[in-house]
Image (cartoon, rainbow, N blue to C red; front, top):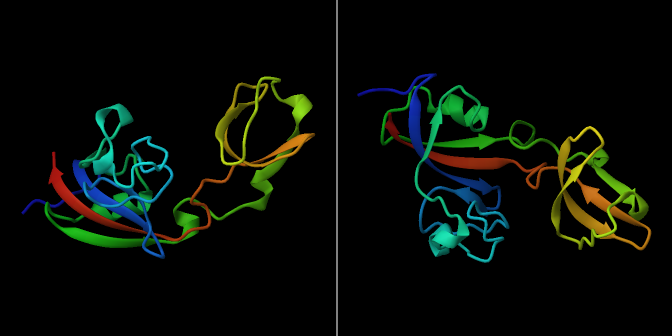
Length: 172
């Protein structure tokens, strides 16, 4: 039976979970996804991607990627090497190799006077800030005060060890 190797285009199914079993991302239908961003764009209103409708942007089903191209987490791409279609693996990824450690220095405040007047963020809003060099930074609003707004630029899963259950569906 054929085995996947670096450079192969493959289709995989996966479910990404936190240590407590909470699913934060999946390609599988009928798997509950408790993340605020379950991949369908519903903002967590749909508890599984199968609840999403076509207006929601759902793309459940196997994901295509080229092994070794950095299209997914490198540890997952490495784990696919040597797998045969239909084979499954469980891969545990420590925080620093997944979405990074949580970095307190990525939490910062900006005076309201430095922000656009029409910006009225609320705690929990995800927004994109653009600096004078046109560089974008995705942030989460964590505190809103009269004189400043505090943002967190860490990935939402920073500091979390994650587990992926992967299945090689096919080698294309």
